[in-house]
Image (cartoon, rainbow, N blue to C red; front, top):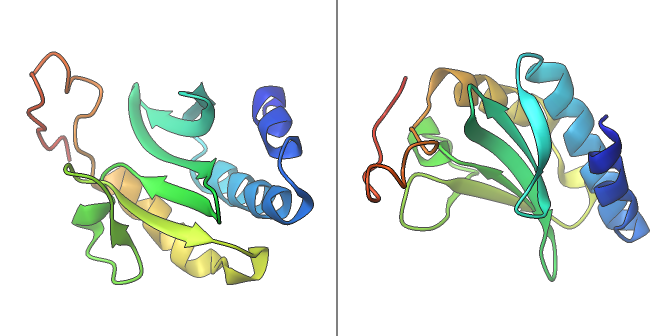
Length: 129
C-alpha cells in the first residue's frame, strides 16, 4: 500500500480504517497494472490515466466507487451521478464480499468509459472498452 493511501486510511476512525485497508488490499491484488494515488483527496486507481475505482469516507459510510460501474450490470451496485458511475457503501468490513469485489474489479478492466478526456469533450463520455 502506498504511504499516501496508508496515511488516508490511518486518518479514519477504527471501523472505517478497517474497511479502507481491506478495500485497498483487495484492489491492489486485483488491479496490479493500475496506478494509484490520492486524487481529489481520496484513494483512486487508474488504468492509462483513466480513473477506474476509488473509495472515500462519507458521513455515515465508506463509499466504493466504480467510474464505469453502471455498465457492469451488477444489482448490488447503486447508480451514482449523471454519468456511468456506480457505488457500494459500507459501514462494517464484514459487509465486503471479496468475490463480488473481485468480479467488479475485473469488469472495471474490461468495461471503461473515457473519463480522462471528459473535459476535452465538453462532458461527452465515450466508451473505451
